[in-house]
Image (cartoon, rainbow, N blue to C red):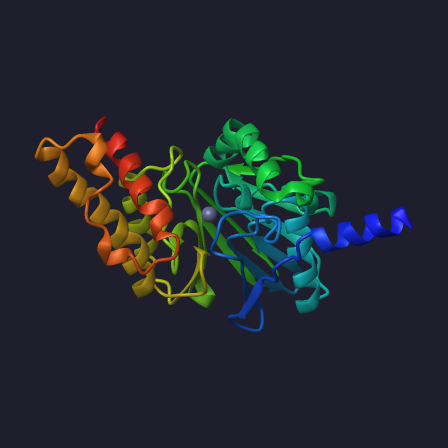
Length: 301
Ligand SMILES: [Zn+2]
């Protein structure tokens, strides 16, 4: 009886897992859109957007999921779309959701591709990321262990699978030091990773560089893609991406420049006007932090 009660409690207490929102872009390209909130037991650290490209020689996955169980959740969604195996996984950056699912896919035979700057960032921050994930995911963290890319590149890497060519570009530091975007020219689509956020506010952290992020965005925008699969949020275009990511970063730095030129101190830098972006999710949690982080970086410029 006691065992029965305990197993009943275990079922009641373990949180249900949130489904990924599967957005069909074409017969062969999908976005898997995760929650736009903090990592949690219910989102398995899949609180980001992932890309799935099906070719007649296998699948390319853009970002592996934020945990072992997160990667398994992505796998089960891909199996509903195709019988093709995942051959390549691209890590578009250094955040947990861009690489901590690697081990799952490598054990299934996929090769992981990342910029060298991203791999250096993975090694640099893995301890902090694992500690944080353990705390956010609780029992759902089980099985997650760091594993690095099989193929590294400095600034550009292209490969073809089936009849689809993937061009990966690392311009410089954006949300993380090793951020890259993935361009499929024939489909006029870019998977931006954490270079682009829509629907929610972006985060400027200690690993970010708001100044070069603006330049990275400009390099991406120069490709003029019709479709963008952002790092966070639903499938979008360059207009919405510009409004919620580029304009946000430019506003942050422009307001802070004026503030610093006027002799402003760090304490009140958090109060600069960001109200044009208050419709974005997580604004209250992140806007002031972003200002402070950017202020600190700008003091060194
Ligand atoms: Zn992210």
